[in-house]
Each structure stands twice: as structure tokens, then as C-alpha cells.
Length: 452
Image (cartoon, rainbow, N blue to C red; front, side, top):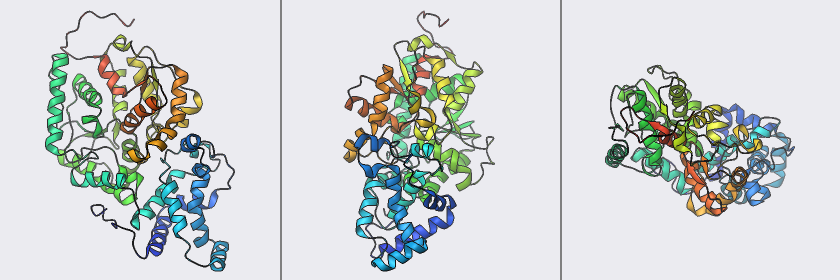
């Protein structure tokens, strides 16, 4: 909390401080005020939340959760509410209300599925985000989320991987690729003047090395010069789960790294909230990217699809014939980030066996994995598994043996979900399968069957 400039314990005048933060949020975010005023409690969102479906707790209905903040809003900002509060007496925000906030606004992954079904377009994620920011301002925030952001400020990434370890991991993966392919494929670090700054989730360098290898092979095969950065070695932006100030500070590190390394383009790796924060907020909170050739960051799957369509990648789909794949749309890639068709086109270019899940839980209707929004902490594993049940049920219908997703948090959460709900399903990234299907220039293979 100290690293983030937040109180290390709840402040004494916490009610006044909380209301001052709420005032500021309402003044700068007109959408939030609209969302406070416009709900008619129609119930269209009630059964759309994966946590409600998994737990059966009525307080996890999106409308009930949002009412926890609206109750304070009505007490302070509406004439009828102020009159009722005067008769009621006591502070408008009390211990009981704060306790409910701290429970239920941290049982929302900000996935925004409920918003798709809301006839008024109310974005519940904005409400959750506001409540979390109010709590953080008075010294009430979870260790997991604040610790992750603090690691970014002190080391450069969510996992706390120091620059020397990042470079060692890159060299190790280079050796792995050479042993596999006989081709020298680089995974560059802090290289200046190249075409692309790749900003992956730090988990790809340690927990998901097949994804990092996929990045390297794609750039190598296409002849694109690229680099990673030890200063901005994290695509994920946990400010999106805590407060606007930290969203801006984390985002600015990426832009500063792109300037320092004098690159031409920023490309985001396979991470859902990294993509949402980068494409939705970068130009607003960190200024226009007028020093780059591209006006906004690009997703690695957008770039990969461009290369596939140009025939720049030599792909042998039959190398993935042991895989029966289905695709999980990460909330922040699909619903919030607009990448729906591109991942599927890439996936269909590298696998012969692909099965979609039911239509009511994919694309913009996708279910959260159950671990997003700052919910990946081990101490709430039971809640995470309950939240993952709707996705597990959908995967079971397909009969697939591989669940593919371009998100590091989903890759961390979904293997636990598959095991918990007794599904013999592996979890993979999209570029992992691209790399498996790819023949690099100069790579020699035993005779393989044709895809035709």
C-alpha cells in the first residue's frame, strides 16, 4: 500500500474520505452517474453472473451488488435520500455497508457479461471499479491486487521477475527452441530501434513458456525485428481492478518503454486485461502514440492473422491432429476488446478439429473463467471454482480435449477449473498451437502428411 501511495490501514475519517473519493469519481465519470440513476431493477442481469450461478448467493446478482453502491448514492446525492438519511441519523456510509462492499465488490470479476443483457446498457464493471477505488482510498484493499501493482513499480512486472532473471529466461527459451528446431530463434530483450515492442504478460516467460516460444517463432518466421523490455515487462494492468490512478501509471510504463527503445509498433501478448487496458485507455491516459507508426497497440493475434493471410507463416495443421480444440473467449479480449473472429480464424488455420461451445456462452456472451478482475488469489479458491462452473459445463458439452484461450489469467485459472469439475482437458494459448504447427525457415522435418 505504501508503494501505491495508499493508506496502510483504514484512515480515521474514513467516511468523509470515502465520500470525497465518490464525489471525485462522479464528477469525472459521467457514465458512472448515469449508471447510478438509470437502473430500474428489472432483473435482466440476475442470472447472468457466473459467481451467482456458481454460488447461488443472491448478493452476487449484479443488480444486488450494484445496489450496495447505489444505496450510498441515494443517501447522499438524491433529495429523497438526504431527507431519509436526516431522519435515520448516523453517517451515510457505516460499518455494515463497508463490510458488504469489501465482500461483494471483490466477488465481481468485472467481466461485464451482465452489461450485455442490461436493457439500459449499465456497465457493472464501472460500478465495481468505483467501489474498489473508494475502498482503496481509505486503506481497504486486498493484499493480492495491491502487491501485484507494487511489484510492477519496483521491478517491472506482476510476478516480481527482476531484469536479470528475465534475460536468463529469454536465453533459456532460445536454447530450448534451438534444441527443438535446429534454428537460431532469438527472444530479444531491451533491443533498440526494432520494429516491434512486444509487451506480454510476465507469466508467459515463466508459467507459459510455450506461449513465449510462440511469439518468438512468429516474429522469426515473418522476419520482424522485435524486443521485450525489462522496464515494461508486463502487459497486465491491475490498475483496472483497483483505481484509475494506478491504471494510468502502469499504462505509462509501456509507452515510456516504447519511446526509450525507439520502436515502430507496440504489440500486446496473450492477456485479457492487458489488451483491454492497452487498446481502450492508452491514447486517453498516456497521450497519443504519434511517435509510432501505428495509432494504437496491436494484439499479437491481429498481427498473426495478418501474417497468415499473407502466407508469411508455413503452417502444417496436421501437426495438431492430436488436438480437439474448443475456444474460450476471455472477457476482456472479446466483450471489452473486440477480438472475436480473429482468434478463431487463427485457430482454424492451425488445427483441423475445432468445436464451438454453445452460442449463449461465447463471443460477447462469454463466461468469465472465474479468476479475472483481481480474483486469482489462492485464499478464495472455493469461490473461483464456483465461478468457473458455467465455463466447465460448456466445455463438457463439446467433448474437446484442449481448451484454447489467449489470456494468462485464464491459463492460470482454467486448469484448476477443469480438474475441479473432473474434465480431462488441457489448456493452451492460441500462439502455442501456431508454434506447434509452424515450420521455420531452414527447419528440417521428417516426412509429414499433407493437410490437403
